[in-house]
Image 1 (cartoon, rainbow, N blue to C red):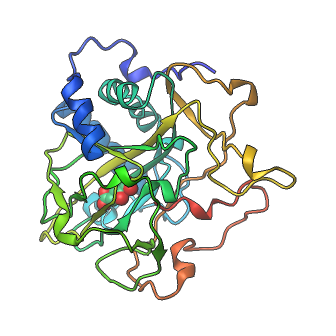
Image 2: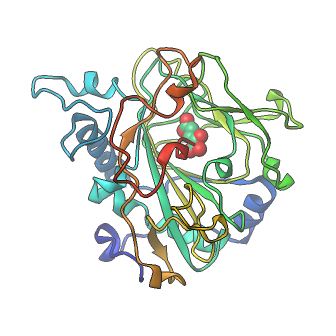
Image 3: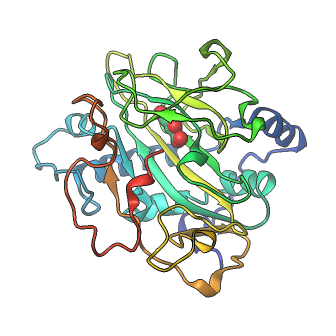
Length: 324
Ligand SMILES: O=C(O)CCC(=O)C(=O)O
């Protein structure tokens, strides 16, 4: 399979920032990298408008989203949802932004020539919404070569007040996936919290960025975000996840009769280079859904994975494990 035709950027002659060796060295050492001004203002604006359209239900069905009435104000609709998983499945624009030129530049330098995407998440995080407790993304999306990388596109200025990302620089270097537990901390949504790692909260730094920046982070990096404590507004972010195309992706339970060793989730989008497993074809497995925000409390672990019943029998994979 060749790289998807990303229409938004095919004809573009706009100059975009390009990273250099010192940026790659910073990423290797710290496990994250910020590229300021990666998106133009009109690109940010287009993604914001698309966020509203998705939340209104205008791009198609999203599990957990009730289509908005025409008279509902956009601002009210945006407050309803913390995060939508897999928006690229419904939004051609967000599909294209998997391969924004800055993202392709950085990932081909820090991952390798052949890069695939497997997940997108659209955080709206209106004032009052919770953050995500300490975690490492590879505990949810395992690669076989530790190549998982997040590309976190800021659609609003992200500040300490409105719940920016916090990272523990260098924490990826252990190469260890630390244990997790259920928590009942109302600052965070219902995803599990990573514990037992050799750092204190004081070792973390906030990654405050302007809208249009992209923050890249390693799948073993310890990171979290705190609640949006601003009086109003949102902290919108489109975060996509990527890995080397050479690695299998044993993300979901193997199919009946399949060995764990060969499990390979093929619901992917090639964003650079070529796919050595193209002969396997592509699947459409993951379905867009909202992420539980824990506003009813997280004491019941079932809230971590389901907000409403749905039919799973038609799905070859169990998609309980995609809440990173
Ligand atoms: O943006 C956030 O609040 C958290 C994002 C995150 O934890 C992730 O993308 O893994």
